[in-house]
Image (cartoon, rainbow, N blue to C red; front, top):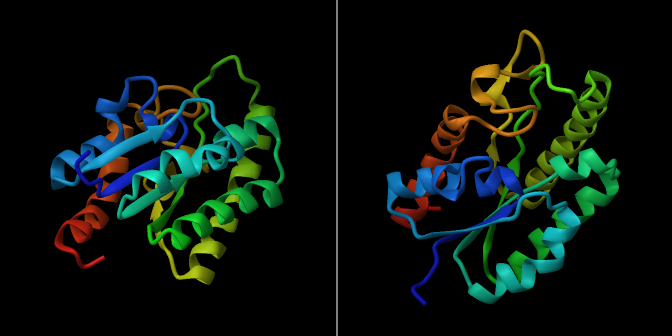
Length: 197
């Protein structure tokens, strides 16, 4: 197997739902930079499920770098900040122990698209996601890790929700949304290509 520069560990937001991995931010950024990436996003997964397969799907493959993004499905299920933060911290620790550089990613905002999901439920989810993001920012600061912010570029500051043109539904980016996420990742990918990460 050729060496892997970067593995994307995550859920549907890494996999590229609803379009597929070829439209994911990971693949778009890889195409632009020539980085060898492996998409290990699985739709519907929580951070606990990612942690359960981290050794098999990341550590065993010995990439140089791993991006870790989760939390949207945890928020749907109502997991606490301590649970989600603990799962991400453990994945970071496993990566560091294996000599793999972990990059923590902040998941995108949710979007009020007028779907049949009650706005009150989405507001509860958004509150949990905000707390998860804060925990990720604290972790990145404390461990001096690189951070990819996929939240701010997709946010409409006027409403506090995702910009509708960037979303295919309440949680998943549109093609334009994935392109915007890729633009966030490209500078980091370029540094990895040049060996200056």
